[in-house]
Amino acid sequence: MSRGIVIFDLDGTLIDSAPEIHAILNAILTEEGGTSLSEGQVRGFIGWGTDHCIGKAMGAAGLDPEDSDLRERITAAFLDRYETQHENTKVYPGVVDTLELLATYGFALGLCTNKATGPTRAVLANFDLEARFDTVVCGDMVGVQKPDPAPLLKAAGDLGGGPVLYVGDSEVDAQTATAAGIPFALYTQGYRHAAVGDIEHHEAFDHFDKLPAVVARVLRPGTA
Image (cartoon, rainbow, N blue to C red; front, side):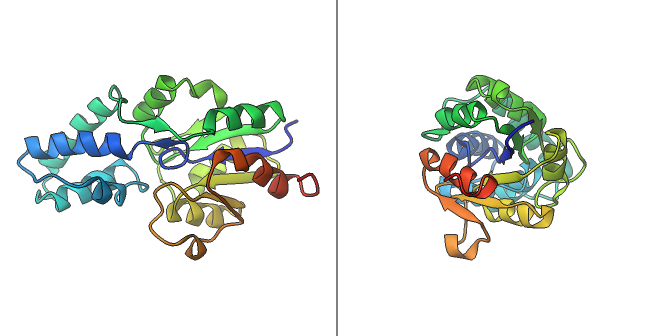
């Protein structure tokens, strides 16, 4: 039996994928006659899933997000490139060592992301991260996406129950944890749009070296 369960968001929490998403989207949008977007604009669209991101990006680039054929074409091109292009993505400092340490301590580890299965599996494989998680729940697996609590609750259920901590970087993650009734740890260096104090959380941390102590305080009170 694990000492507890720690479930992670992916983009903006474990990996900084915004530069990659920005590069791919800009290439496709300009090929379709749209204008270039800044990385800051694209970061603002991340967190609610691929469809939301592409719709917002199309509108910001001067393309019609209601044009279903165009949107389908852009989405297909994006997903195709996103499964193979990782040179602009990086794992946040301390992530790998922290995942290894938590597993060594006996915590079950899960991933809960709004990213589709194909790109999720591809980026995890690229950084040799997939085997570190006991379950991976993606945005196209349960029929709804975060902030609906169903994906997070599925991940927790996959891991057999017990005390759970959800780790994420955004308002969407905080809302998901609240809806699921699960404590939330906020990684402050990700893609949040509001001040830390305006996002509901149990703990906040700015480097993954600090996360094991956060996990201990939340899941194993009295041990840290």
